[in-house]
Length: 340
Length: 288
Image 1 (cartoon, rainbow over the protein chains, first blue to last red):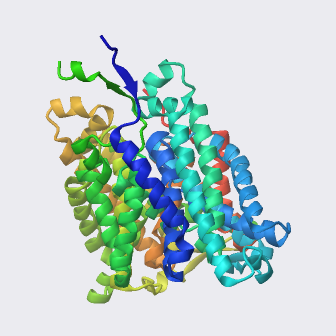
Image 2: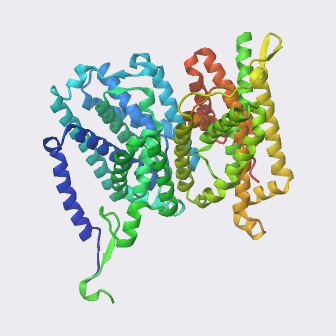
């Protein structure tokens, strides 16, 4: 008699891996087939996808519902400007150093705001973001309240010609999205990811099994802050101009990201991908309607939250038992015993 | 010296307005553990309702309160029973996200109807009148605002501890299931709590509109001030909320005195300092 075996991969996940690789190759060749406007749009999609994956890790797995992620997006953006203009760094290392600085800064912040529970934690993160915005508005050498532009000499370090520059920043955005997606995936598959999934399902039970909840949440918060700052640096490398209001915008860097994750499906890795595609499809269709489009977005998020709290991917998964990123374990019985 | 005293007095009076921002938040958190992200946008909605009332009927903002308070309270009841009751439960995400969505909808609807132009409610003489007290000029409007804040908080305290409705609020707050068994309809009780909270929001919105100009985008800032006042004062303590508002107001006016750019920053820093030293706020409610 053969023994049942435990696997993580499924035929669907193997197919998804294959399709994912094909899509990745096609996207990596983007600069050879896409127009300039398309490349800009796709870069934006990649960066939003990365932000959504990070927020999903925090809120969907660690229970850290932050509405203040714009603090680190803006911080990363400002570090790009400060470290290149005053530190003389090349933009790419400047963005990475910005990530490390954000990680260091997030530890004292966490010790303060982790004292707030649930929804109060959420608003506490928002206060921190406001402190960041008001503080950077005071720094006159970075343009104060009106902001500043990235000097031409620094922009040219990304690529001397306009076409090279656009291709390079496209690849940076794509690379960042892939790294974030893979980092979150492997984090969740690791021992710590298991602890995190246990916390998501029940904090009391997880703590009973010896998981240090505060520490696990702190780790997630620090990692999320670092990655968010790096994505922020890349966002403002695309924009080439920064101001406190744009850098620390709650609508752009948190509200939209939350809507993406909720619409796609919170607490899954597939959700943010679906959500990002739906968000940009809605935006590109309704953008001409201005404020009306934002009202529709708010309404869609409310309806999804009430009628399908697991999001669009939750609907698919419940119906077809699909999992494109193999995270859960499945017990598989040999063929002859199936159905018995 | 007199200038510093002046700053502190102005800050205390400003604290009355912040306490009004905070009282509604504190009330609904106390009754149903709901944190309403749209709270600030509802304050601005009330200010715009006041504007429309004043323009259409040609009345003083204080008279407009007679129309705006019942309208907002009614809206609160319908909002709670029609939408927010469905989000309540152990998971904090649904109420947070639904009120976040609501915030975006209200903000953009106001933008669509009233445009982004700053507006102000014309209070007439009361806006500029002041009484001299020992070298200081104390504005009548801030003084009236502070007095209204005290009356509102005393009123809420009375409703909570001396009326049948208040007994219902405290009962569902302690244990909603047993309260339901005892014959309370918790959906209705929650509706009443939100109606009361938005009644206070209406007062806060009108007073805000008389004090400064407003536009659809400033709601989030008012939410944060209210939230800070609640946390500084201590969750679940209404008089503490007034103290929290005063501390926030004084921190802001002193910050502004040092450097105009520091007004808001000083308020946030005061909040973070309180959070670091006294995580439960300065006057936490004693748990029974």
